[in-house]
Length: 328
Length: 294
Image (cartoon, each protein chain N blue to C red):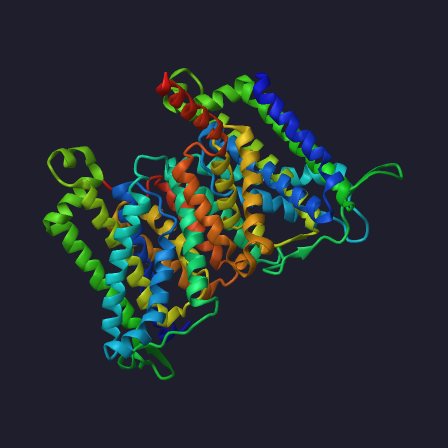
């Protein structure tokens, strides 16, 4: 692997590992939340950036796993991480299988809208039926723990333990996806994105590949949803809303489609921009209109950075080369 | 359900469906002709509703009032807004990928929503219908039906007819239809495609604004109203087939019936019903009911 690419990734991981030493409880909570969204963004990047499938329903997979955590946890004792994590990921993966199996029959804008439709179905099921507890959402009274015998290895109720658990999960997902993209399976997905017709002509049955990508993406989104429900100890239907699906899409576009780093950078940039425009210290009373600043920044970034934040380096070096070339 | 209730629900479905059509037709025009995914279209509906709320006192004090004067002023402002937005934001999106259009128009939603909050505030406001349309028609012995809702349906039907006439029977409509399917050919025949796009975009905005303005007395105006209508309009556009006006009309009426009767008969499942309908239709016909250009 190219060291120019891997060094920044390692440095960023190190910085995140050291962050709790410098940050207070708010900073830890903020970074935990952002890393969870980075996991969700990575799951979407597998579909959008790698396979070329623009899914507008990623939040449903995220939210369903969150609901699974709350609904499956016993009320009187903390659930064991060992079964709750895989089960909630499996719930998301199962819905992804259902959603993918049907929506993959359509393409382009129709595909975007069918994935949205399936996400809205899940949204209304938790919103309107007794299964989901309605608009108010439901609380998770006891957070899951990992224990062997009676020794508690990890208690996710502790914010610092949760922070490192989330960081580990993010790193794991990143490495897993990086390896996946370099595997023959990942190359086939990239081939489908670039020219599906030609992939078929080469002898690939593309449908199972796309469906597998969907299920893997669902499981990763489910991991994010699990972590989010555990962090907040609370889930509500907004976790499945199309606003969140849209935001995640914005994150990966903002960071730069087609790169795993782009998804992570996008998630952090989005969260930091929100914090910046919400800050009363900088904007005073105007900070309650923080969405205005966020919206304008997004518009400007589309105009100036068609390849996303990750393209800044290439853009600057090209500018520089042109200038140097001009003086020669 | 007795006959009078059934009749009222039918009228409600018709009114809701036609209103959806008014918003969705602008969306499908912009989508089909310029190939731009415009998430900000719901904001235009919201802007229209707030115009009905904010312009009415102004028109009353300067021009001596009049419901139609407010509508006309709103439409003029809408066309100007559409023209300006196309020039400033959308004209450089045509060559770009769909995802960048999504990002840009998502940014626009946030900007419009916050500007609304700064200018008008976050309160819910009612908008009174004009006095001469405020009555109700008796239906059966106990039920009545508000005249204003019938008026909405009539306006929408009028606009639908006008749109059909312009698109099917005029030279401008011919250029628009040709521009949707054979962009380069139309351009090489000497049609100013930039101007054509700007006109279509302005018309699309005006349709959404008009829908918002006539809907305001029924729905009242509230923050986030644009987003609610946006998603359902995308559903309409996609079910109908992207770029197809008659598809949008049929789909909007279908959605109107499904949602109105769903709310009455199956209140728990009403929200899901529309999306189940959409998924079923797209699985049956992956390109929507009427695919434009085929």
